[in-house]
Picture 1 (cartoon, rainbow, N blue to C red):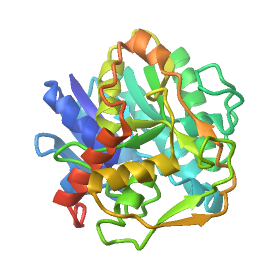
Picture 2 (cartoon, rainbow, N blue to C red):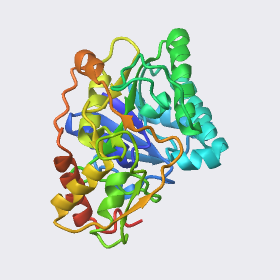
Picture 3 (cartoon, rainbow, N blue to C red):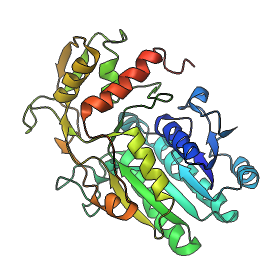
Picture 4 (cartoon, one colour):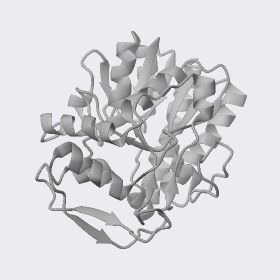
Length: 323
């Protein structure tokens, strides 16, 4: 297929582009490079630099790339920033996303895979979280993603755009070529690995008094290549739907730090901080629907293997993508 990938220069987008190309698809990446990196774009893909706010550029893109499907990763995704600047999140994640959908409809593109998030659930009422758990976002980031999911329902009903919305949990890990290099890094594993890399003096734990076995938060970590597999499978959905993506097992913050120590062979000093507002004690996915409907079979279920792939990439790329 001819596939347009927005945000294909970002962390998850770059790995999905690599996977799609390995599967024999033709890929065009559209990215404004504010968060992504040009060096993170697989050389086999066509690249168009542009912004989703530019309707004329989107129209030109649809005419030249002629995609049969769109994968949409271009979003702002920092929870804390969304609490400080909600305009940025609703504008980019909702308004600019609408521009993309409109361009698709205008040019007859009927297949859409959306990079969504477990943040749409907020503080979940039950764990593990399946797709029937009520969605009650507690920050503008999660709200912006939920609003866009609601928009997708109407574009399906009115315009026949078949979509798969993939709500993933904690993406982590790397391939040999592509890894995690955010300009503002907030994710636990790369932040912890920056200590043995000499970029931070210590790792931080936000809250050690949660009702969990070791007192730290528990999260569901999913390898980025397993995410990529799910996106490729989602291209074949016959009916629009929503899917949670996770391993279904939880790992605590302290267990992640222990895994990082084991993989790197380095001591990692830890500083304990107070809880952050809105952090649930547990976020664990029930991914049975994705496994049943998509035929998704994640390959990585050990946190040590996920950390190891990330560590290997950072060792080979100590300055990240260097831009």
